[in-house]
Structures are given as structure tokens and as C-alpha cells.
Length: 137
Image: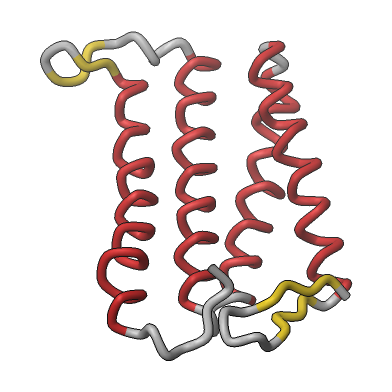
């Protein structure tokens, strides 16, 4: 089992089957982004499904630790934004006008900002009010 020390000295333990899933998640994510970089549309589109699914499973499994939940939700919406941007480029609508000087690829800003809000909530509101509670960060 993988372990890390929580701020109060206790161990935060990740079951091996969860760690294997997390590591596989990285493999899928890298294949998705490599396919995007190389413009391999079918592979890129296919890799969205396992990459995004596993990110939500990881977030669900860590929901009992607010620090983990917020960071894993931020990763999930980052993958959503990243996937939308890839789809926009693959489909050729990324440079279409959206609003003013912004194009349709800039719609990805919405989930990117949502991820930043998850982290801002954790660091600026939740963590300062729960200093006595265990956290992994």
C-alpha cells in the first residue's frame, strides 16, 4: 500500500488496487494527450472516456478527505477542459468566433476556472476553518 503522512502524524493509506487505477489513469491521460499532439483523432477521442471516468472514480473514492476531493475534482474538470479543447481542434471549430476576441476553444476556460474554484474553496475557506482536521496537504 502507498502511504503518506497526514499533518497530525497518522498515515494516509491508499489501497494497492486504487494506486494501480491511479497509475493506469496516467497512462490513459498520456495516450490522450499524445494523440492530441499527433492529431490521431480516433485514439484521442477514445482515450477521453477512460481518462475522465477514472478521474471521477478517484474523486469519489477520496471524498472523505476534503483536500483530496478538491484536488481530484480540479483534475477532473481540467481533463474535461483539456478534452473539450482537443475536440474543438479535431473538429476544426476551435478558431470560430465566440464572444468578442474569444474563440470557441476559449470555452475551455469555464472548466479550468471551475477547477481553480475547487482549489480556492479548499485553500481559502475550508482549510483555514478546519485546521484541527486531518488533511493530506
